Amino acid sequence: MNLITTKSENLRGQIRLPGDKSISHRAALFAALAQGESRINNFLVAGVTKPLLAGLTSLGIPWEINSNTLIVQGRGFAGWETPVDVIDCGNSGTTLRLLAGALAAVGIPATLDGSPGLRRRPMNRIIEPLRKMGVRIIGDDGHAPLRLEPAGSEIRGIDYSLPVASAQVKTCILLAALNAEGQTILREPGPSRDHTERLLQSLGVPLRSKSHRAPAAAGNFGGNQSKERQYVTILTPQHPPHLPAFSLHIPGDISSAAFIIVAALITPGSDVVIENLGLNPTRTGLLDALSRMGADIDIQKQNEYMGEPNGTVRVRYSKLSGIDVDGELVVRMIDEFPAFSIAAVYAHGKTIVSGAKELRVKESDRIAAMCKELQTLGVPVAEKPDGFIIPGNNIPKGGRVSAHGDHRLAMALAIAGLQASGPVIVSGAEMIAESFPTFTKVLQSSGANLSSEGGI
Image (cartoon, rainbow, N blue to C red; front, side, top):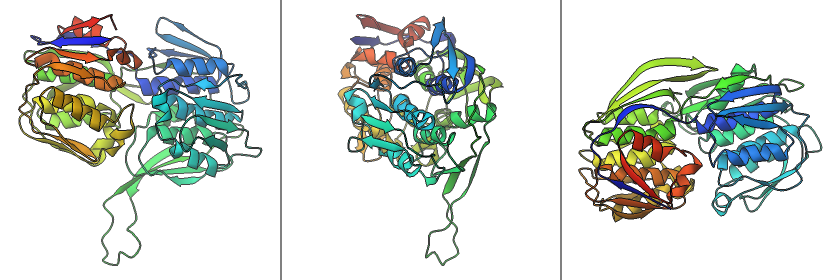
């Protein structure tokens, strides 16, 4: 399926986006572990969440969707049923990793598998800590399929340092820790998104987070303290484990909003307002980076619900300047780099991204794939092992590009065509439905010239 973008005049209007993908996953799973009926408004119904819902059905959890409200009849930690078949997680790494932690907590056998793309993604990140907790888990050389079996004894809490900052890995361990014996302490080298901590705290789980300077390395006799921060999450489980049923309104997904924001910034005359947008500070790295580039972004109103901040954001066309991006900012905008790269293409001056090696193990190798397709459009981007260099002052020439089976890459390439000198044709654009099914409709309603062959 192809998505065709041609040069657009301006983007204008008020927009409400589908619910945040990360919060939708967590809310559905926590509702299944809770006791009683939970209602989740503005739930994201998309390719990445459907495998989770299907998985809940196979685990004996009743649910239904009315409009965009998900209603889940939670069965608690003792009410899940052993699935008859393999649970297919599709292309969703979030579904597989979070379900692995939940299954460890409830203690029933199950096998988790998914698409060829999901089978390529690294799973030792959850296998190792789960095994340290006493969970019996078998993986195919560190990849899916994963087979979880009853531990035969109590799961135990651990003190564990994550090799990379990862909200999915952290959440997997915290879910298992809900039914562990003893406290679990997780240490991360960066500030990964904290939706899990906020939701669990709002449900009464004894959990706290803090950050501090990591201790100096052994043998450092010069008295210099380490400049690296360590992010620590501590969960003290309740016995027996219990989560109450809840009601939640999910804010719009800032990772989806990233494409609308960048589209408005690069299209002269644009003035777009995005309502009910999630503004969790662990997810707003893109807004910080774009502001450093000179973006006209105004947060007009803010609220908070169940620990999750949201607000109304106004974005207007801006003349951007290139910047350097590295360090903790990379973690806070890791999913937004495809959109960010398009802002860098149209900016004045060079943009250098470093420390983003994690982009190579997403739905695609986003560094290699994005560089290849931008080069196809005539942008002289340079690939680095951990990022890329975009010289700026570029007008893409148009052409046919590939989504590489990656929903975010497809959307980034589509908005690249809004000011290109010729049409940009994105093949494989059906992947957009994985996370943002209304992408084309939202941009068209704002004035963008997009059309699809076969529809999205």
